[in-house]
Image (cartoon, rainbow, N blue to C red; front, side, top):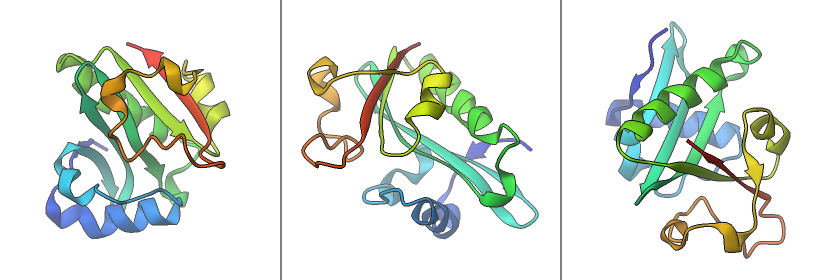
Length: 142
């Protein structure tokens, strides 16, 4: 399996995968070319996308289809997209999760407060500190 950047043709499958994972898809279609996907014979197996805000990336989505879980594909996708944005000058990555803080902690992400986030990331649709169930904000330096 080789990761590659998604195209408009991938959008329906990416949208279905993210929706199945209860991830917000608002605004992703316009940035689909920034998402890395992996396919198998059945279709999109996983995807990951990082939005860039100056020197900070926001992990907007990381999802793996049920048939591809427990094989390290999430880490594989994350490492591929991180390697790419690192080359583009991104120095840290932030994310917000309601369900996967333990997973991301194992990968080196640390919980942070909203005041720790760079102001440049506040426009991201992936960061929503105003909701009561918004989840855990996390960050990792690259």
